[in-house]
Image (cartoon, rainbow, N blue to C red; front, side, top):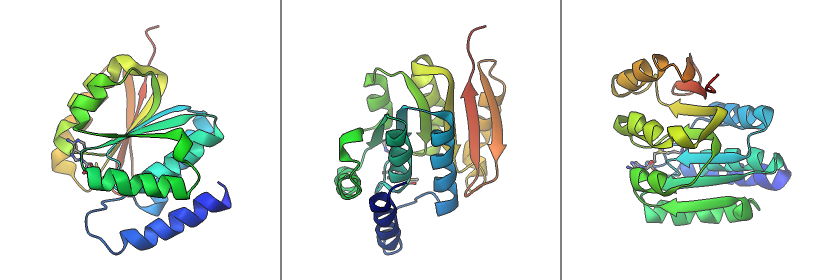
Length: 188
Ligand SMILES: C[S@@+](CC[C@H](N)C(=O)[O-])C[C@H]1O[C@@H](n2cnc3c(N)ncnc32)[C@H](O)[C@@H]1O
């Protein structure tokens, strides 16, 4: 990660500490997402739940190192515009497409394919979001769903559902608020 991105992440962490609606990944979880993208070579990233762009900065920096791009979605236009400013500050504006709207509507309109998805918006729609994306995921695409430990009751049905699907391999990761790491399998 270059110094400009690292400095912007540091400044955004300072801002996030002053508001109560960022709901951002922990720095450890965000660094994990960054490493996963970098190691996998993913180039077509999607984030459901932009907020102020904290996880998005970590994602976009790894995706841009891989020669890729990020699409990020949030229904709050105030947050989307704030996030745009942080992406510009980091020098990542050109590789990030910000979409403002309800995630279900935006996901249905996206072409794909995607090879890395951070599923981090409203927890009761996680199944619906994966269903909307399933035909737009490349083989071995990663879908990382946040809050499996902090919102265990909300995500219990999702975790059970994805683990019994034959076209995903899925495992829980005890990092940050807990994540479900699901890998899309090919047809063979
Ligand atoms: C947990 S926060 C995302 C945090 C962000 N991924 C990060 O780590 O910096 C969830 C975000 O999802 C957005 N959101 C909630 N429901 C949504 C929906 N139905 N469609 C689009 N965005 C939604 C909220 O506005 C909020 O900013």
